[in-house]
Length: 365
Image 1 (tube, rainbow, N blue to C red):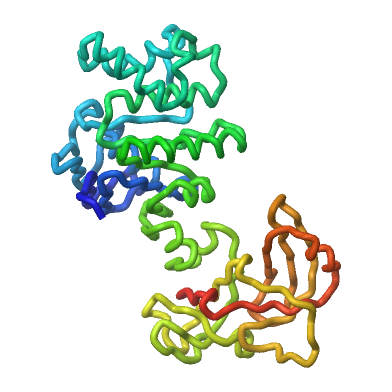
Image 2: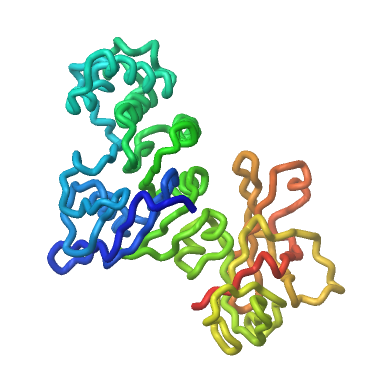
Protein backbone atom coordinates (compact mmCIF):
# COMPACT_ATOMS: atom_id res chain seq x y z
CA UNK A 1 0.00 0.00 0.00
CA UNK A 2 1.20 3.57 -0.72
CA UNK A 3 2.10 6.15 1.90
CA UNK A 4 -0.68 7.18 4.24
CA UNK A 5 -2.78 10.09 2.98
CA UNK A 6 -5.19 10.11 5.93
CA UNK A 7 -4.50 8.85 9.44
CA UNK A 8 -7.28 8.78 12.05
CA UNK A 9 -6.50 7.67 15.60
CA UNK A 10 -8.91 7.31 18.51
CA UNK A 11 -11.46 9.58 16.82
CA UNK A 12 -14.80 9.69 18.64
CA UNK A 13 -18.01 11.70 18.81
CA UNK A 14 -20.91 11.77 21.27
CA UNK A 15 -24.20 13.61 21.32
CA UNK A 16 -25.17 13.56 24.97
CA UNK A 17 -25.44 9.90 25.95
CA UNK A 18 -25.53 8.76 22.32
CA UNK A 19 -22.24 7.43 20.94
CA UNK A 20 -22.25 8.46 17.28
CA UNK A 21 -18.68 7.24 16.78
CA UNK A 22 -16.75 5.04 19.20
CA UNK A 23 -12.93 5.55 19.33
CA UNK A 24 -11.89 4.74 15.77
CA UNK A 25 -8.57 4.13 14.01
CA UNK A 26 -8.34 4.32 10.22
CA UNK A 27 -5.55 4.71 7.69
CA UNK A 28 -6.16 5.54 4.02
CA UNK A 29 -3.41 5.27 1.41
CA UNK A 30 -2.59 7.89 -1.20
CA UNK A 31 -4.76 7.30 -4.28
CA UNK A 32 -7.05 4.79 -2.57
CA UNK A 33 -10.81 4.59 -3.11
CA UNK A 34 -12.24 3.79 0.32
CA UNK A 35 -15.97 3.42 0.92
CA UNK A 36 -17.60 3.94 4.31
CA UNK A 37 -20.55 1.55 4.18
CA UNK A 38 -23.24 0.77 6.71
CA UNK A 39 -26.90 1.10 7.66
CA UNK A 40 -28.46 4.33 8.94
CA UNK A 41 -26.95 5.30 12.29
CA UNK A 42 -23.79 3.26 11.75
CA UNK A 43 -21.46 6.26 12.14
CA UNK A 44 -20.26 6.54 8.54
CA UNK A 45 -21.52 10.10 7.95
CA UNK A 46 -20.28 11.18 11.40
CA UNK A 47 -16.80 9.90 10.54
CA UNK A 48 -16.87 11.71 7.18
CA UNK A 49 -18.05 14.94 8.82
CA UNK A 50 -15.21 14.79 11.34
CA UNK A 51 -12.65 14.21 8.58
CA UNK A 52 -14.13 17.15 6.65
CA UNK A 53 -14.08 19.47 9.66
CA UNK A 54 -17.86 19.92 9.60
CA UNK A 55 -18.09 18.55 13.16
CA UNK A 56 -15.73 18.66 16.13
CA UNK A 57 -14.56 15.40 17.75
CA UNK A 58 -14.71 14.60 21.45
CA UNK A 59 -11.34 12.88 21.23
CA UNK A 60 -8.70 11.56 18.87
CA UNK A 61 -6.63 13.02 16.04
CA UNK A 62 -6.90 13.46 12.26
CA UNK A 63 -3.76 13.77 10.12
CA UNK A 64 -3.76 14.55 6.41
CA UNK A 65 -0.39 14.07 4.68
CA UNK A 66 1.24 14.04 8.12
CA UNK A 67 -0.28 17.35 9.28
CA UNK A 68 -2.56 17.40 12.32
CA UNK A 69 -5.83 18.98 11.15
CA UNK A 70 -8.04 17.78 14.01
CA UNK A 71 -9.14 21.29 14.93
CA UNK A 72 -8.55 22.95 11.58
CA UNK A 73 -11.31 24.55 9.51
CA UNK A 74 -12.52 22.67 6.39
CA UNK A 75 -10.67 25.06 4.06
CA UNK A 76 -7.39 24.28 5.85
CA UNK A 77 -7.56 20.53 5.16
CA UNK A 78 -6.81 20.25 1.41
CA UNK A 79 -10.04 18.34 0.81
CA UNK A 80 -12.89 18.57 -1.68
CA UNK A 81 -16.48 17.60 -0.97
CA UNK A 82 -19.35 16.33 -3.14
CA UNK A 83 -22.83 15.93 -1.69
CA UNK A 84 -26.10 14.36 -2.80
CA UNK A 85 -27.80 17.74 -3.34
CA UNK A 86 -24.97 19.09 -5.58
CA UNK A 87 -25.05 22.56 -3.86
CA UNK A 88 -24.54 24.46 -7.13
CA UNK A 89 -25.08 28.23 -7.21
CA UNK A 90 -28.24 28.78 -9.31
CA UNK A 91 -27.24 32.30 -10.42
CA UNK A 92 -23.88 31.15 -11.80
CA UNK A 93 -23.15 29.38 -15.07
CA UNK A 94 -21.49 25.97 -15.13
CA UNK A 95 -18.08 27.56 -15.75
CA UNK A 96 -18.61 30.10 -12.95
CA UNK A 97 -19.62 27.36 -10.51
CA UNK A 98 -16.50 25.36 -11.34
CA UNK A 99 -14.31 28.47 -11.10
CA UNK A 100 -15.63 29.47 -7.67
CA UNK A 101 -13.09 27.49 -5.56
CA UNK A 102 -10.27 29.03 -7.61
CA UNK A 103 -11.59 32.54 -7.01
CA UNK A 104 -11.67 31.85 -3.27
CA UNK A 105 -8.01 30.81 -3.54
CA UNK A 106 -7.19 33.97 -5.55
CA UNK A 107 -5.97 32.06 -8.61
CA UNK A 108 -5.24 34.44 -11.51
CA UNK A 109 -7.86 34.63 -14.28
CA UNK A 110 -5.81 32.99 -17.05
CA UNK A 111 -4.84 30.02 -14.88
CA UNK A 112 -8.41 29.71 -13.62
CA UNK A 113 -9.81 29.58 -17.18
CA UNK A 114 -7.37 26.82 -18.09
CA UNK A 115 -8.14 24.81 -14.95
CA UNK A 116 -11.91 25.18 -15.47
CA UNK A 117 -11.58 24.02 -19.08
CA UNK A 118 -9.54 21.00 -17.96
CA UNK A 119 -12.05 20.10 -15.24
CA UNK A 120 -15.03 20.34 -17.59
CA UNK A 121 -13.18 18.24 -20.15
CA UNK A 122 -12.59 15.63 -17.45
CA UNK A 123 -16.36 15.28 -16.87
CA UNK A 124 -17.25 15.61 -20.59
CA UNK A 125 -19.14 18.90 -20.18
CA UNK A 126 -17.12 21.60 -22.00
CA UNK A 127 -20.08 22.26 -24.31
CA UNK A 128 -22.29 23.22 -21.35
CA UNK A 129 -19.96 25.80 -19.78
CA UNK A 130 -22.39 28.67 -20.41
CA UNK A 131 -25.53 27.00 -19.09
CA UNK A 132 -27.14 27.46 -15.68
CA UNK A 133 -27.83 24.58 -13.25
CA UNK A 134 -31.59 24.74 -13.91
CA UNK A 135 -30.88 23.92 -17.56
CA UNK A 136 -29.07 20.68 -16.71
CA UNK A 137 -30.22 17.14 -15.93
CA UNK A 138 -29.50 15.58 -12.54
CA UNK A 139 -26.56 13.64 -13.93
CA UNK A 140 -25.10 16.75 -15.56
CA UNK A 141 -25.45 18.71 -12.31
CA UNK A 142 -23.62 15.96 -10.47
CA UNK A 143 -20.79 16.13 -13.00
CA UNK A 144 -20.54 19.89 -12.49
CA UNK A 145 -20.27 19.29 -8.74
CA UNK A 146 -17.48 16.79 -9.42
CA UNK A 147 -15.67 19.26 -11.69
CA UNK A 148 -15.93 22.02 -9.08
CA UNK A 149 -14.47 19.67 -6.49
CA UNK A 150 -11.59 18.52 -8.72
CA UNK A 151 -10.64 21.87 -10.24
CA UNK A 152 -8.17 22.77 -7.49
CA UNK A 153 -6.82 19.19 -7.20
CA UNK A 154 -7.40 18.53 -3.48
CA UNK A 155 -5.42 15.80 -1.76
CA UNK A 156 -8.61 13.99 -0.69
CA UNK A 157 -12.13 14.06 -2.13
CA UNK A 158 -14.99 13.25 0.25
CA UNK A 159 -18.29 12.08 -1.26
CA UNK A 160 -21.44 11.76 0.85
CA UNK A 161 -23.96 9.57 -1.03
CA UNK A 162 -23.47 11.66 -4.20
CA UNK A 163 -25.58 9.37 -6.42
CA UNK A 164 -28.50 8.86 -4.05
CA UNK A 165 -30.87 11.16 -5.95
CA UNK A 166 -30.27 9.57 -9.37
CA UNK A 167 -32.25 6.78 -11.04
CA UNK A 168 -30.59 3.36 -11.30
CA UNK A 169 -29.44 3.60 -14.92
CA UNK A 170 -27.90 7.04 -14.41
CA UNK A 171 -26.43 5.96 -11.08
CA UNK A 172 -24.71 2.99 -12.73
CA UNK A 173 -23.30 5.30 -15.41
CA UNK A 174 -22.04 7.81 -12.84
CA UNK A 175 -20.33 5.02 -10.89
CA UNK A 176 -18.23 4.31 -13.98
CA UNK A 177 -17.56 8.03 -14.45
CA UNK A 178 -16.35 8.47 -10.88
CA UNK A 179 -14.12 5.39 -11.16
CA UNK A 180 -12.66 6.72 -14.43
CA UNK A 181 -11.98 10.13 -12.87
CA UNK A 182 -10.38 8.48 -9.84
CA UNK A 183 -8.17 6.40 -12.10
CA UNK A 184 -7.14 9.42 -14.21
CA UNK A 185 -6.46 11.77 -11.28
CA UNK A 186 -5.05 9.32 -8.75
CA UNK A 187 -6.70 11.35 -5.96
CA UNK A 188 -7.73 9.69 -2.70
CA UNK A 189 -11.52 9.30 -2.50
CA UNK A 190 -13.49 8.57 0.67
CA UNK A 191 -17.02 7.68 -0.33
CA UNK A 192 -20.10 7.24 1.89
CA UNK A 193 -23.01 5.03 0.86
CA UNK A 194 -25.53 2.57 2.28
CA UNK A 195 -25.74 0.80 -1.10
CA UNK A 196 -23.83 -2.50 -0.92
CA UNK A 197 -23.68 -2.98 -4.69
CA UNK A 198 -22.27 0.53 -5.15
CA UNK A 199 -19.59 -0.14 -2.55
CA UNK A 200 -18.64 -3.49 -4.09
CA UNK A 201 -18.42 -1.99 -7.58
CA UNK A 202 -16.34 1.09 -6.84
CA UNK A 203 -14.05 0.47 -3.87
CA UNK A 204 -10.45 -0.58 -3.41
CA UNK A 205 -11.42 -1.23 0.21
CA UNK A 206 -14.66 -1.10 2.17
CA UNK A 207 -14.94 0.08 5.77
CA UNK A 208 -18.17 -1.53 6.99
CA UNK A 209 -19.59 0.21 10.05
CA UNK A 210 -22.34 -0.61 12.52
CA UNK A 211 -23.48 1.07 15.76
CA UNK A 212 -20.69 3.66 15.66
CA UNK A 213 -17.79 1.24 15.13
CA UNK A 214 -15.84 -0.35 12.29
CA UNK A 215 -17.00 -3.96 11.95
CA UNK A 216 -14.69 -5.02 9.11
CA UNK A 217 -12.17 -3.28 6.87
CA UNK A 218 -10.90 -4.95 3.70
CA UNK A 219 -11.28 -5.46 -0.02
CA UNK A 220 -14.77 -6.12 -1.41
CA UNK A 221 -13.78 -9.77 -1.90
CA UNK A 222 -12.58 -10.03 1.72
CA UNK A 223 -15.89 -8.79 3.10
CA UNK A 224 -18.01 -10.79 0.68
CA UNK A 225 -16.25 -14.13 0.94
CA UNK A 226 -14.59 -13.86 4.38
CA UNK A 227 -17.03 -11.98 6.64
CA UNK A 228 -15.90 -11.71 10.26
CA UNK A 229 -19.41 -12.06 11.69
CA UNK A 230 -23.06 -12.63 10.82
CA UNK A 231 -23.76 -8.91 10.43
CA UNK A 232 -21.19 -8.61 7.63
CA UNK A 233 -22.40 -11.80 5.93
CA UNK A 234 -26.02 -10.68 6.07
CA UNK A 235 -25.49 -7.00 5.20
CA UNK A 236 -23.19 -7.43 2.23
CA UNK A 237 -25.24 -9.33 -0.32
CA UNK A 238 -27.58 -12.28 0.04
CA UNK A 239 -26.39 -15.33 1.96
CA UNK A 240 -27.56 -18.69 3.26
CA UNK A 241 -26.80 -19.06 6.97
CA UNK A 242 -26.97 -22.51 8.57
CA UNK A 243 -26.96 -23.06 12.35
CA UNK A 244 -24.10 -25.49 12.90
CA UNK A 245 -21.72 -27.01 15.45
CA UNK A 246 -18.01 -27.53 14.81
CA UNK A 247 -16.99 -31.16 15.27
CA UNK A 248 -13.34 -31.00 14.13
CA UNK A 249 -10.76 -28.44 13.03
CA UNK A 250 -7.72 -28.91 10.80
CA UNK A 251 -5.94 -25.64 10.00
CA UNK A 252 -8.40 -23.30 8.28
CA UNK A 253 -10.89 -26.10 7.58
CA UNK A 254 -13.53 -27.39 9.99
CA UNK A 255 -16.09 -30.17 9.90
CA UNK A 256 -19.61 -29.12 10.87
CA UNK A 257 -22.89 -30.69 11.84
CA UNK A 258 -26.31 -29.14 11.20
CA UNK A 259 -29.31 -30.41 13.17
CA UNK A 260 -27.42 -33.59 14.08
CA UNK A 261 -26.49 -34.37 10.46
CA UNK A 262 -22.98 -34.10 9.08
CA UNK A 263 -22.73 -31.27 6.55
CA UNK A 264 -19.14 -31.79 5.54
CA UNK A 265 -16.40 -29.19 5.63
CA UNK A 266 -16.28 -25.41 5.74
CA UNK A 267 -13.56 -22.79 5.90
CA UNK A 268 -12.90 -21.06 9.24
CA UNK A 269 -10.71 -17.95 9.12
CA UNK A 270 -11.48 -17.00 12.75
CA UNK A 271 -9.34 -18.87 15.30
CA UNK A 272 -12.23 -18.68 17.82
CA UNK A 273 -14.07 -21.27 15.73
CA UNK A 274 -13.07 -24.39 17.68
CA UNK A 275 -14.56 -27.89 18.09
CA UNK A 276 -17.79 -27.64 20.05
CA UNK A 277 -18.42 -24.03 19.01
CA UNK A 278 -21.85 -23.04 17.72
CA UNK A 279 -21.41 -21.22 14.41
CA UNK A 280 -23.21 -19.99 11.35
CA UNK A 281 -22.12 -21.54 8.07
CA UNK A 282 -22.43 -19.01 5.25
CA UNK A 283 -22.94 -20.15 1.65
CA UNK A 284 -23.50 -17.52 -1.04
CA UNK A 285 -26.43 -18.30 -3.39
CA UNK A 286 -24.25 -18.25 -6.51
CA UNK A 287 -22.05 -20.97 -4.99
CA UNK A 288 -24.95 -23.42 -4.66
CA UNK A 289 -25.28 -25.98 -7.45
CA UNK A 290 -28.75 -27.39 -8.13
CA UNK A 291 -29.45 -30.89 -9.46
CA UNK A 292 -32.50 -33.13 -9.80
CA UNK A 293 -32.93 -35.25 -6.69
CA UNK A 294 -31.37 -38.70 -6.67
CA UNK A 295 -32.93 -40.77 -3.90
CA UNK A 296 -29.94 -43.08 -3.67
CA UNK A 297 -27.71 -40.16 -2.69
CA UNK A 298 -26.99 -39.62 1.02
CA UNK A 299 -28.41 -36.39 2.48
CA UNK A 300 -25.12 -35.43 4.14
CA UNK A 301 -21.75 -33.84 3.47
CA UNK A 302 -21.79 -30.67 1.36
CA UNK A 303 -25.25 -31.59 0.04
CA UNK A 304 -28.87 -31.17 1.03
CA UNK A 305 -32.35 -31.98 -0.26
CA UNK A 306 -34.84 -29.11 -0.47
CA UNK A 307 -38.23 -28.36 -1.99
CA UNK A 308 -38.54 -25.53 -4.51
CA UNK A 309 -40.98 -22.90 -3.21
CA UNK A 310 -40.45 -19.99 -5.61
CA UNK A 311 -38.57 -18.87 -8.72
CA UNK A 312 -37.52 -15.28 -9.34
CA UNK A 313 -35.96 -14.06 -12.58
CA UNK A 314 -34.11 -10.76 -12.14
CA UNK A 315 -32.81 -10.01 -15.61
CA UNK A 316 -29.55 -11.88 -16.05
CA UNK A 317 -29.92 -13.93 -12.85
CA UNK A 318 -32.44 -16.55 -11.75
CA UNK A 319 -33.00 -17.21 -8.05
CA UNK A 320 -34.49 -20.39 -6.66
CA UNK A 321 -36.04 -20.22 -3.19
CA UNK A 322 -36.07 -23.57 -1.43
CA UNK A 323 -37.21 -25.06 1.87
CA UNK A 324 -35.25 -27.84 3.55
CA UNK A 325 -36.58 -30.19 6.22
CA UNK A 326 -33.15 -30.26 7.88
CA UNK A 327 -32.96 -28.73 11.35
CA UNK A 328 -30.97 -25.52 11.57
CA UNK A 329 -31.86 -24.57 8.00
CA UNK A 330 -34.43 -21.97 7.08
CA UNK A 331 -35.08 -20.75 3.55
CA UNK A 332 -32.27 -21.60 1.15
CA UNK A 333 -31.47 -19.57 -1.98
CA UNK A 334 -29.58 -20.64 -5.09
CA UNK A 335 -28.69 -18.23 -7.91
CA UNK A 336 -27.31 -18.75 -11.39
CA UNK A 337 -27.25 -16.95 -14.77
CA UNK A 338 -30.63 -16.95 -16.45
CA UNK A 339 -30.93 -19.41 -19.34
CA UNK A 340 -33.37 -21.93 -20.75
CA UNK A 341 -32.24 -24.59 -18.31
CA UNK A 342 -34.07 -22.70 -15.58
CA UNK A 343 -37.37 -23.63 -17.22
CA UNK A 344 -37.05 -27.27 -16.15
CA UNK A 345 -37.66 -26.47 -12.47
CA UNK A 346 -41.18 -26.60 -11.09
CA UNK A 347 -42.62 -25.28 -7.83
CA UNK A 348 -42.89 -28.14 -5.34
CA UNK A 349 -40.08 -30.13 -6.96
CA UNK A 350 -37.47 -31.71 -4.65
CA UNK A 351 -33.94 -30.78 -5.67
CA UNK A 352 -30.44 -31.68 -4.57
CA UNK A 353 -28.25 -28.75 -3.45
CA UNK A 354 -24.47 -29.03 -3.53
CA UNK A 355 -21.65 -26.68 -2.58
CA UNK A 356 -17.90 -26.80 -2.24
CA UNK A 357 -16.23 -26.76 1.18
CA UNK A 358 -14.13 -23.84 -0.09
CA UNK A 359 -17.34 -21.84 -0.62
CA UNK A 360 -18.74 -22.45 2.88
CA UNK A 361 -17.48 -20.20 5.69
CA UNK A 362 -17.96 -20.95 9.39
CA UNK A 363 -18.57 -17.73 11.32
CA UNK A 364 -18.45 -17.48 15.11
CA UNK A 365 -21.99 -17.02 16.42
